[in-house]
Length: 124
Image (cartoon, rainbow, N blue to C red):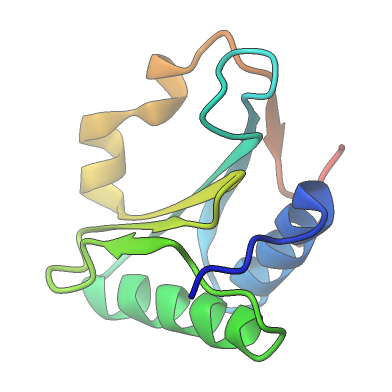
């Protein structure tokens, strides 16, 4: 059963802090609220190996599951090159570094406000 986060901005802040604490790299949040109706935010993060990509996704899923928040869908977990976690208004993308460079979501959504995480904190 899918339980959507009550507050998408609070969810984003918690997810970013967790990803940062688990050594995710180059964490960026795209604010897509004014650009599309598919959601509010994209969280984009990277890792230097597929083991860490999978670990980051597992840690995020476990943390929010403990709070009763389950993703609608998780894609890419078997290859761990790009794991997409759909939490309704927030979609989390965890990439293996080379995959992130190839797909470059930040370029595709260049008109969306971009917020970079610094020490697990966002300028939102």
